Image 1 (cartoon, rainbow, N blue to C red):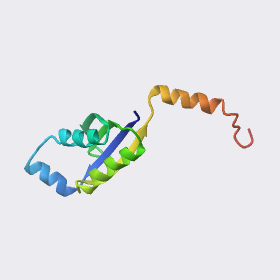
Image 2 (cartoon, one colour):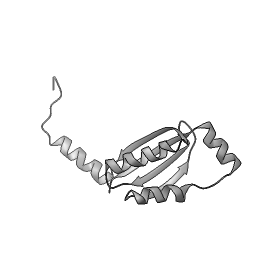
Image 3 (cartoon, helix red, strand yellow):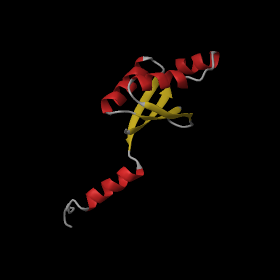
Image 4 (cartoon, helix red, strand yellow):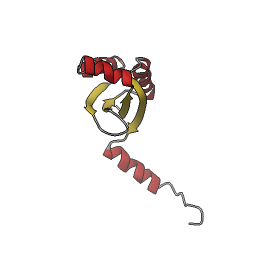
Length: 108
């Protein structure tokens, strides 16, 4: 199954709700991911532009998009970014394919 990195920045209201009632939402997230046929690999809080990172395995892009829609519809995130990930083996295969494609850059 393909892997996806999901980065979320929470809206101020979502932070306020968490401060008032701190809780680990991992199980709620896991339930949604599993209902879509995927698996939650891990979840972390982080510093910087985004406040939380998830790594999931999802059956396909449609399921990953549905996950993003569900999360955004809840109103918690002010920003949500999904990045498809390649395993090292997939990346290496992509490099092999690129190298054997016969493509020559302009002027090359």
